[in-house]
Image (cartoon, rainbow, N blue to C red; front, side, top):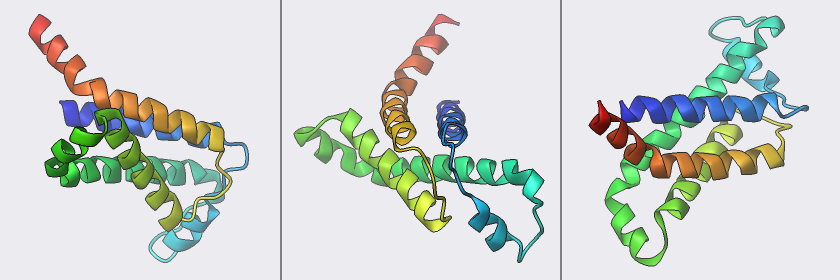
Length: 133
């Protein structure tokens, strides 16, 4: 439940970044995927979903991989900064690999801050909601 909630919220947040970026360019994904199947330029919505789901998947995978190291990181810094760095790593990796251009830097900053807050408090909120039911 917690994992699905994180995935859904991160996907929605990243989709908002794409929608609020007036000069977003995902045409490279269309060209790369044209080898496997054709995506019409009218279906550019599919590339937005691919990018959003990829960022969410990679971010959650990185959190899982780096979970053993979080205690060491927490000794010197905070959990919020850990999630901030993981979100930044996931986002930048997917945007570089999929060659997404023209995104709004302000939207990215809002994404990083809000995703870090959400990742930090999602487990606590879900536990509280389970306890009340």
